[in-house]
Image (cartoon, rainbow, N blue to C red; front, side, top):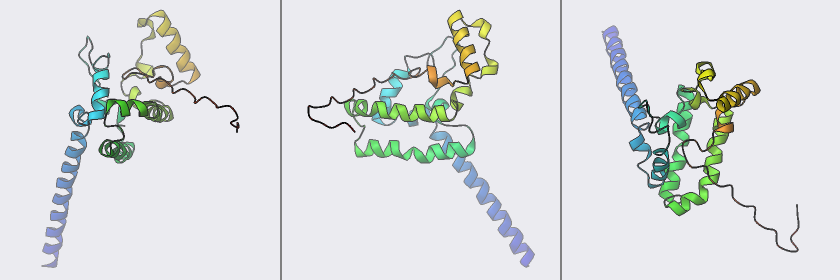
Length: 185
C-alpha cells in the first residue's frame, strides 16, 4: 500500500513539474514578444526608431525583435535579465519615463547601461546573428571589410562601433558649466 502511495505521489509531483515547466516556458515566451515589450508607453519610442532600421525591415524579410537584442539565450543570464526587467516596469509605473520628454531626459543613462552590459558580454546577443566566423568579409565593402577585420584582430565587440544601430543614439549630456567661485574637486 505504501509503495502505491509513493508511486502515486511521485507521478503527481512529476505531472505537476511538467505542467509548471510548460506554464513557465509559455510565460517566458510571452514576455519575449515585441507586443509585450512595447506595451508600455515609453517603449513605443524605441519601437518607432527600430521600425526605421535594417533590423526591422530588410530585403531578406528577417526581423530582429526586442528579445533578440536584449534578452540572452542562455538560461541563467536570461533569468537574470527577466528579474532585472522589473526596473523598466517600475519606472513606467512611477512615471519616471512615461512621457517622451521624461524618456529623453533619462535616455543617455539607459543607453549607457545597455551598452555597458553588451560590452561586458562581448555583444553576446548581437553575436547570435552576427558571428565573426560567419562573416564573409570579402562580400563586404572595402571600408566594412577593413574595419571588421581590424576590430576582430583588436578584440573589439559589436557595440564598440555600432551604438545607435537599432535606436537613435542619444546625445551625451553637456557638462554643467562651473559658476565663478566654485571649487574644483
